[in-house]
Image (tube, rainbow, N blue to C red):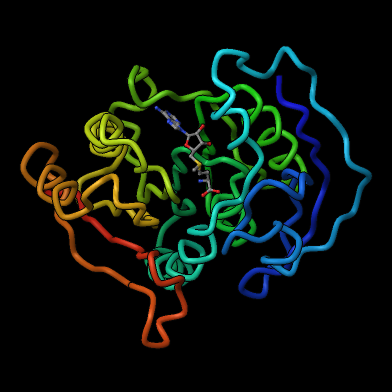
Length: 248
Ligand SMILES: C[S@@+](CC[C@H](N)C(=O)[O-])C[C@H]1O[C@@H](n2cnc3c(N)ncnc32)[C@H](O)[C@@H]1O
């Protein structure tokens, strides 16, 4: 059984203040392998607390340990999200851009998009993550994202034809078996011409080149751009942020 502790943080990301719950366990990983507070320049604003044990899957200790982390691909996604939201917001419309975050974890990119005025739905399949996401969404008050349970393996009715403008995801393709269901959900959720922005940490497990091929051939998602680290790109060396567009 995990004994992870969580507390509330506040960080300024791309000029926007985001409050969120995340792990406060010094053993676990935040961006760049450091603690969340150190790597995001976040400050803690609460005492650590434990979540009710029934939220944790005793069969899957590894998954429990991943709960509450803010992974190192998050800042990369937020960095690439800014210009995209600017473009979407520049299109004259009566409604704000609609954004879906998949495998949201603590949901920082989605929270950030909501703080910038997007209509956001944060999703994950893990119960403990969903509890923390609910708390994180509530910090925003008006304009808070909706939080919904979503496992890519079981495509729910509300996704198909949901016509999101943008799907975002950070560090979700670390298991080859997840590639097909993940892109299946993306294809169902996006409107024609909609955009997928996914930041990826290369762990040498999932071939992103193969994933790009499958997204195109099986799901009509055309890869259009990559922002990568190194050479002053501002992302970690093994991290890249990929853009796909859903074919019309
Ligand atoms: C490495 S964490 C990344 C979390 C967050 N996006 C970040 O970058 O900090 C992967 C997340 O994907 C979620 N996930 C994994 N498989 C999933 C599936 N089949 N359906 C929905 N979420 C899934 C996990 O629960 C976890 O929150």
